[in-house]
Image 1: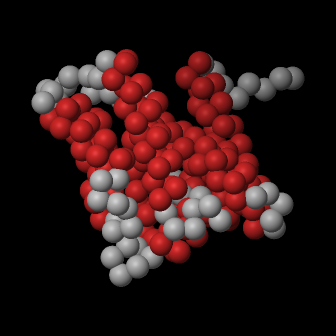
Image 2: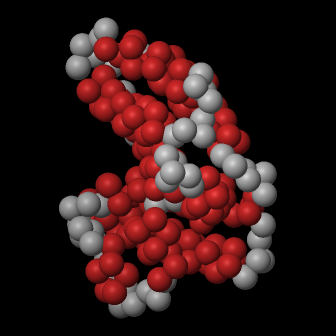
Length: 209
């Protein structure tokens, strides 16, 4: 006799999301182990790790009511994934970013600030991907990103990413809180965020190692 896990479309979607969360955690655990064992290179590891972290954050946000604790979810489904939990829940950035951040550490530039900038970049790009384009949704995440970038002494004074974020914040300040970016504006902002992120990573010491 076939047993159905769900009784309606909403329940089915919930279990589909559970399956996706399970898969992301398992994939992250395998990726972390492959990186630690030197099975894959840093250049292969980092984009995959960033993608999994972004997917995890988006899904965890969607499931915040049904999965308030990821640790409990892992216990419930008897998942042995300590490396994945560290990467997804505790750190929130790839190991390579942590290593570069550590190399960049000076009296005025901490590894935590570099990791904070990366997180704000990811959050800003995720906000647009989720079609959250109202001024009162976009402005705070860009302001947080700019504040983090301003803390870093290793970036040149006229770092392009910093200049672009200032321009966008100035543009948004002239709009109403409930106003929304057009499709074209949202696409341009996402492009500016992506290019600024790439420039930011390249500007870190030992970025090519």
